[in-house]
Length: 309
Ligand SMILES: NC(=O)c1ccc[n+]([C@@H]2O[C@H](COP(=O)([O-])OP(=O)(O)OC[C@H]3O[C@@H](n4cnc5c(N)ncnc54)[C@H](OP(=O)(O)O)[C@@H]3O)[C@@H](O)[C@H]2O)c1
Image 1 (cartoon, protein in one colour):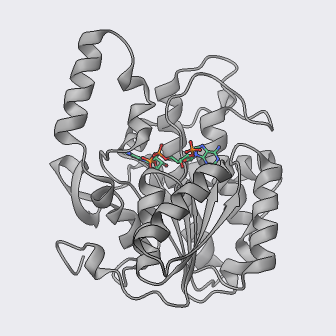
Image 2 (cartoon, protein in one colour; image 1 turned 120 degrees about the vertical axis):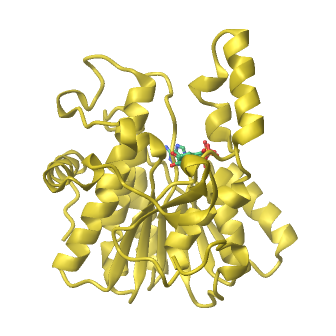
């Protein structure tokens, strides 16, 4: 870490660079779109709802009229939709400097994706696994390309239940969220191993935003239940959650800082990683387990039918 309080002002000028951000219409994805486009990058906003995406783009353009944004529809819970997005991207763009695997859902009621995957594992992990794999041709052709995958401190409590990945033998929303966030980090670290093994000039980095004020929490299970529990959750949220402007910094540091190394995991520096400026964080022992990441990779290839390197 070269600088203790790395922030928006430290993002370099990004003229000529292209980033694709999933979930770019709200929360951290929207904030990242705003900050990176402010610095001159062209941003492809991958959103599942085009109306929301266009509205988000219009809001940014009102504040930053020179921003270069395009909105592409993509549902990470649908492999065909991911294929359409990557086809469109590969047709239109010759470079991809930053792929930001950001979109996510947390602890929703049990549901399956279009392809029959459990919804959280399918959206948070398999969707991004497929997208990154399909975009490999342009990642390979962009010197210094970076893939940033959003995990969470919840990855620490996660395990990968290979026998019940589709949740048909029992479903606990929060347990499965932790599983999906562990999968995100296993993927980020394993992708870096594969970049090195195949001699690619690209970096894969994991990041997490601490406790950040976005709609993820407002839609999550912590805002349900008895009135006392709800009051406590709201109080914690108001007192401790940091703004999206702060929460997005680890992701952006991972995406553009020259001090980052492939396989790093970046998160906030204070309050046990809940708030603060970006710093190098500790991935759990399980997240660094080579055997586990290889097994997850193979299973992810089988499920998505996407082969990488
Ligand atoms: N906020 C935190 O404190 C926190 C903490 C740890 C990790 N994270 C991680 O940070 C990332 C961003 O979350 P956030 O806090 O910014 O939450 P958010 O405001 O709820 O944003 C999530 C984004 O993901 C999109 N999305 C959800 N399902 C999708 C799908 N099937 N296909 C395409 N897009 C989909 C949402 O689109 P719609 O608007 O259409 O729903 C939205 O744009 C997530 O990976 C999350 O796990 C957040």
